[in-house]
Amino acid sequence: MCQHYASDIYDYLHNLEAEPKRRPLPDYIEKVQSEVTPNMRGILVDWLVEVAEEYKLLTDTLYLSIAYIDRFLSLNPISKQRLQLLGVSAMMIASKYEEITPPNVEEFCYITDNTYTKVEKVLKMEADILKFLNFEMGTPTIKSFLRRFNRVAQEDYKTESLQLEFMGCYLAELSLLDYNCVKFLPSLVAASVVFLSRFTLKPKTNPWVSNPIKITY
Image: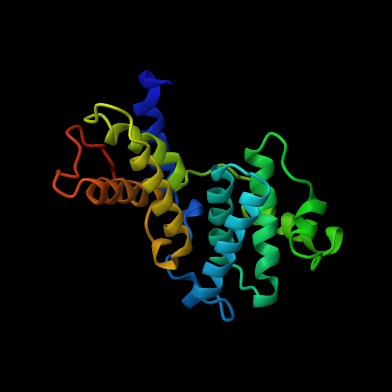
C-alpha cells in the first residue's frame, strides 16, 4: 500500500527492533526469575492466545502483549502467582494500543475468574508495566515483518497462496510459545517462518525467493 516508502519503513523497523531497551534478555528466566519457568511462560502464552480468540483481538495485540511480558520479566522478578496478572495486564495495554474498541478492565478481570480485583491488582500492574516501559508502547514484532515477507515470498507465485500465509501465521504463533525464540530478533523469526513455510509446502523448490529480502543484523 506504500511501496515507495516500504524500504525506508522497514529499515526503520530493523533499527528499532535491535534497540537494547526494546529487547528482552535472552536468558532472563535463568538470570532474573526464580519461580517462573519456560514451561510456565508457555502455558501463559497459550492461555493468552485463547483470550485473544475469545475477545476477537487482532493478532498484533497478541504479539505486542508477549513482547511486553518478556521485556518486563527481563528485569523484574515475579512470583508464579502473579504471572497470570502480568499476562492479562500486558494484553489490556496492548489492546488499548492496537484495538479500536478494546475490552474494558472488568472483562479482563472476568476472564481470570475474577482472581484479580480491578483497582488493587490489574490497574496497579498496568501502571507498573507502563512505568517500566517508559510509556514507549510501540515496538516491532514478528507480525510487523511477517506481512511484508509473505508478500515478497509470493512474488514468484502465479496466484496468491493462502496456504503459505496460514502456514506462516501458524509457525509464527508457535514461536511465541517457545522461550528459546526470545533471543532472536522478530525479523529473523519472521524470515525463518517464511523460509520453512515455503520449504514445507514446496519441498522440491528452492525455498529462497528470487528477490531476497535484505535483513541487517
